[in-house]
Image (cartoon, rainbow, N blue to C red; front, side, top):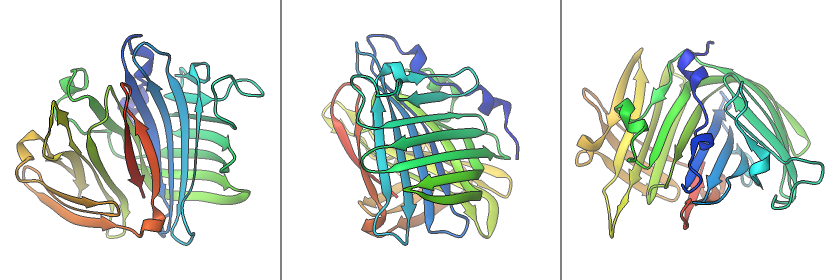
Length: 305
């Protein structure tokens, strides 16, 4: 396993957000047991309303196909618990023994940077801790087709995968039970912007039994432009047999197909010399629901599996 220079140089954007601007950002871990049935999802997020200080949150979810439902919790802290460490990407923590005014009930800390992630969260809903190490043999994935788009006002959401094909090792404790993380495939993602899309779908896959070096990562969004909402705009990548195939883009709006429900999604995504199609689904009990807040107000109900 290795760490590319580009992944090391990835950085948090919230530290550069103007005082009057709205901003959201997340660095997230997605890993699944190689034998199936278990999945780990950890988000380190920033939310900043225009003219206000940012808040930070730790989101933790353990998906277990054999359990009645996922085990999940979220802890939010004020700006005093949020930082971008010199050797990492983001650190979210409850400062002080009792927690500051404005923090939710509970305690926790989560830090992530190139090759490592450490954290613990303890709320009324759940107590969990983790110590993870990760690496990957592939270069980071930039979903947008041109580098200048990452500095432009539009699109309002930017996203990149510093480790699109990560392999995780470490330890995990959830509700007093210990779990060893050994060779779990997954990814590290990073997104930021000023506004969430009106609707979106994200699909990601690694650890394919018949193609262990392959990975698939795509997002599709419907964007609100005044009173109208665009068709699905997909953007993503398939890495197969050592070749990257860029999928979607503005030119693929008419030829792409996204058909989604709360527990399933069918898709057909064209690239330059390839079309990727498939379907993902899971029982309703294996989803967890969250509210994603926009910096300028409003919320989006989402489900994740």
